[in-house]
Amino acid sequence: MSANSDGGVGCQDALGRLYEYLDGELSEDWTEKVRSHIERCKRCYPYFNFERIFLDHIRSLRLGPETTGRLEKRIRDALEGA
Amino acid sequence: MTRDRDKREQFESEALVHIDALFGLALRLTGGDTARSEDLVQDSLLKAFRAWDDFRLGTNCRAWLMTILRNTFINEFRSAQRRPTPVEYDEVADRSVFAEVSAVDPEGHFFDRLIDKEVIAAIDGLPDEFRVPIVLSDLEGLSYQEIAEVMEIPVGTVKSRLFRARKRLQVKLLDYALEMGYLS
Image (cartoon, rainbow over all chains, first blue to last red; front, side):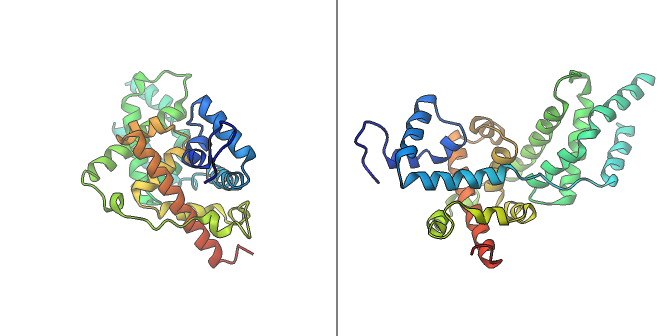
């Protein structure tokens, strides 16, 4: 893990907050620190980029197939008796 | 009885239109169990119907129903998960997918070659402890704090489960992609 010479955070600090950063869970201060690190770190940038691509992929999934009419009928029948 | 009928008709036109979205969420939460998902959707809609007088028309009905379904699932999940699960103590071998593919596919193009169905099957195959946080975070967009409240676990546990869940999922997707020749 590289040491930092400019007062910013190092690789270890950035990597330890990888998903918190990508999930938007960090404070503004930490978000800025991590962003500034990965923008200039040749080792961390590709890794963060890869993880961001992975998460974008998962987040764009469509949830599932449509229901059949059977379930809707079952629920309408249950509502009649509710 | 007219009032009851009006209430039912209003509920059917406002709430039943979201049945596909509810079923989709139920399927992912249950790991693709169709019968259990149907029961979950029915239980949730009946609960919503009983609480319909408290629902304010014009507010987000879909979000309200999704919350009821999520809570219904989690209540069942919690009662079935009172004992510590072996997964908590299971040291999953830490394979770094990025390290494995960085020389040939650093931008993860192999993810694009996987179809949704294959990715969903991989998510469904994760143990509950890992699948539920991924569904709540990545498919439902809940914050760590919201997931912690829904699952009644500390925020730190949410973080570590999400981390491990995503790593497991990446390994499954990579293995699948390798098997299918998606990685050139």
